Image 1 (cartoon, rainbow, N blue to C red):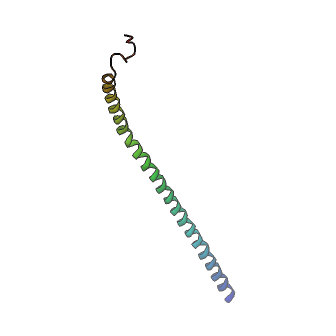
Image 2: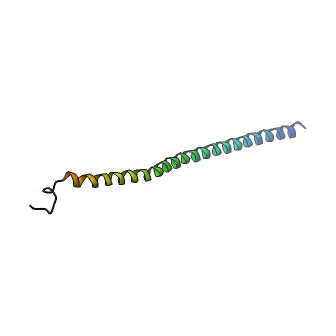
Image 3: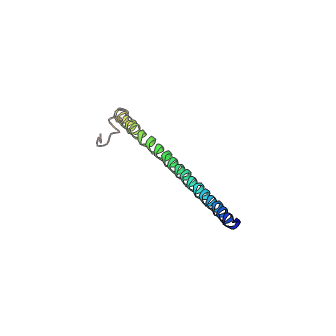
Length: 86
């Protein structure tokens, strides 16, 4: 009678160890998967910030272009303009 109980106890112990290892590895995989998702989320946030700044950059360049177009003809006198060979 002691041998079947011992075998049953050993099988229960082995199944608990295997089950615990399975649960532990599953939790570790879930943790790593969440870490990867969080890292990609940070990449997406950085890309979105960069994309949000592009319209501001375009508007700034357009403003400088208009200001330069208004200043350049007034700074150049009639004798320094191209095509005017007087």
